[in-house]
Length: 336
Image 1 (cartoon, rainbow, N blue to C red):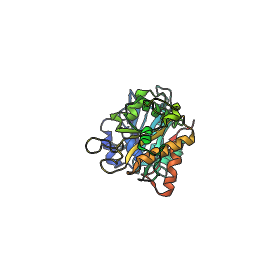
Image 2: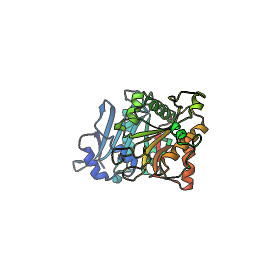
Image 3: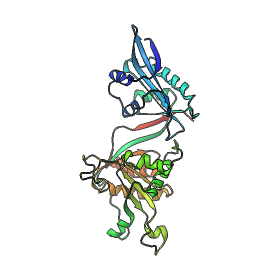
Image 4: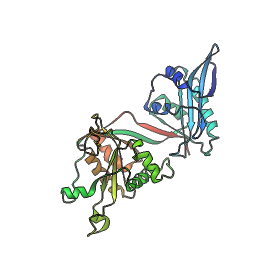
């Protein structure tokens, strides 16, 4: 092989797709979308490897490294090599070139990270390159009725409505809790400063795909003491944001207690007030998950760092009341 290296050019995606075929993993599918011409706003460097045969250059591999506004302490990186060109040093050369480019990133950050599926060639390559796992993530489908419905207060509808509320996704109160929760469960890869506007853009506005939110509140008496005005509400303890498609007629199926319009599990982001004790957090998450998954399945992302959610969901996996969707994902990184 006569391998030459150059910057990414328009049209490379089509040429590589012809040779690569469909993505081997979900991670590859996601990262292929980051292959694009190099630039400085945002900072990105993308390299293509060509196999030159009889003077004809055929793209056979590509690599990219880029900065991220969210989780800025590391650079995202990705390398893909055509199957018939692997184990020939092409990937290793591209990695060396990415590290050289990373050393010149304007942020001064040079540590690389990527996502891999355990047991794949990509995972083996990352391990050989010295990248170590810093997080495991799974998509879990929770079946209907997997958890017993909670009883609020005296069991009346009034007591339940005091603690369960459909909340507008534009709520500042919701945005505040979501942002602090996301930061708390990503201590392994800090998201940096998250303003209310940033949280709403990433998780709660229409462009994020959010269609509705349900929250669990503490009883008013426990939050403010007896005799509080009816207008006062208990503190927000847990939240579930729905990213399912809209139900027929324009409503939100998840928020209305239904599944997605297609009958597929509703995609939800479940979290809690990070100031709660571990026991309080588990209880709040369990109660809210029981409600949203009472009649229809939901699918949620479960990181190992989400300890309260794991304590609720992992027993369901063991009992067959929940199942994995696809395979787990490992985030791997250069050591600190």
